[in-house]
Amino acid sequence: MSAMTDTPAVFGGMTPLPEASGRAGFSGALRSEWTKIRSVKSTTWTLAAAIIIGVGISALGNWGQANHTTETAAQLAQKDLVQRTMFGIILGQLVMVVFGALAVTAEYSTGMIRTSLSAQPRRGNVFLAKLVVLTVVAFVVGEIISFASFFIGAHFWATKGVSLSLSTHGALQAVAGGGLYLVGAALLAFGIGAALRHTAGAITLGVALLFVINIITNFMPTSWQQDIDKWLPYNAGSQVWATQHTADVGTAFGAWAGFGVYIGYAVIALLAGLWVFQRRDA
Image 1 (cartoon, rainbow, N blue to C red):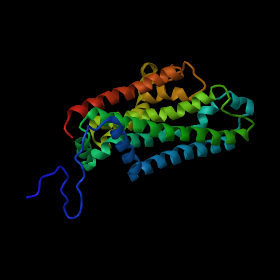
Image 2 (cartoon, rainbow, N blue to C red):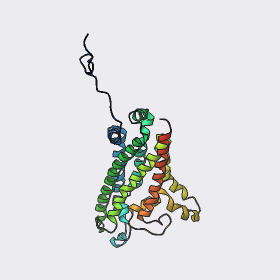
Image 3 (cartoon, one colour):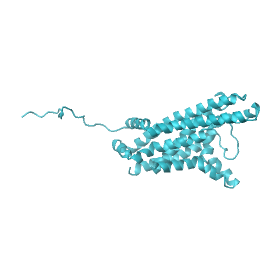
Image 4 (spheres, one colour):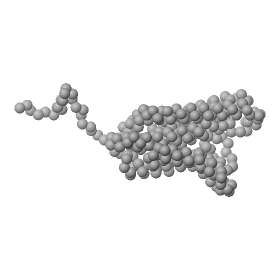
């Protein structure tokens, strides 16, 4: 009889893999989420659509306005043309909502979330890894949209005698802020998606908060609008990509104060999403 050894048995000429050791950590979850987000076609197409729509609408809008304005260069210089160059962010934010929602709800719709949580049972790590990857990707895409829109729009206004550059008063902060605004839209939708775990519901609520609710408030009494408008996510957040701030309705906040209110909505959604993610079965 041959003596037993610690050498793994060989079956069919193949040596089995060694038993797994250690515990799944945050770095592993981070690599996993990065692989998911860059390998899913829907994510890639959504981000491409965000860039095309955001930059395309900005270019089209500024081309049309610059070529049909009757205002002089001096009159135009008094307007916030920096913010106007990034007009496409208004629609680009809606696509970023789709991206943020899909980043968490896609796994629920396919059932893959159960596999993810089996491989990484620490739900907090999974949620944080998703959040980090989403934030980085949204930031890169958001800044691409913002800076590309600005430079293209600046070209059209230059033909009207108005010179815009990043050295223009408040321009750098506004252009960088445009990208940050788009990050906020993705984070808001991500939190809502984690809480609802339903793609259509998350997108619908995200679009309602950022777009539809602004339309509804127009039907309210003026006195109500003065109290409510400045607190709406879009009105507050859009101040970070503006260079002019007044005390008009909906624009009572400065750039970073308004952005803080806007991000507050995202933080509330993220906390709600984390609570549901950790406590409800996949």
